[in-house]
Image 1 (tube, rainbow, N blue to C red):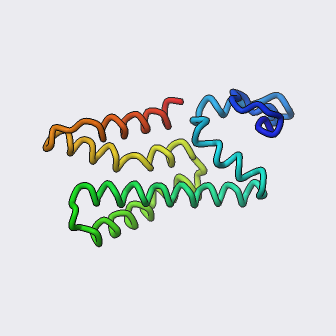
Image 2 (cartoon, rainbow, N blue to C red):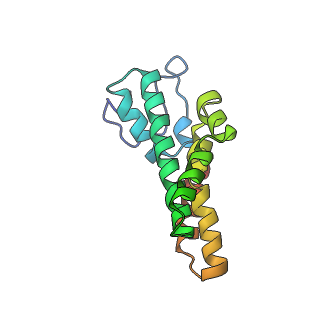
Length: 143
């Protein structure tokens, strides 16, 4: 509702709790909520949530695949297998489809980046991937 009224950088959901408001934007990073809000303009709230969760799954799978691929260049099948196992891990399914905790589900997306970054720092003396992974992890959890 705030987006339809032209408030793009909002800090309070003004139409929740009998129009008293809810500061859910203080607990979830705004950048990751915009795709869901955009989907809610065209779909029902439930359908937009499920599409958004599907997009999170795709992004998580792609990040996991490319992190494993970066770890071992010849391991395409292993990278695909790792991405599938990482996607269907019970904790990931619990976060998104049972508990509806988007902040943790978004942070779960960046764990492979952090692990690859730690490997790169220890064995290859490269720190950029760890910095990116930790920044995204902190952004999804601190905001």
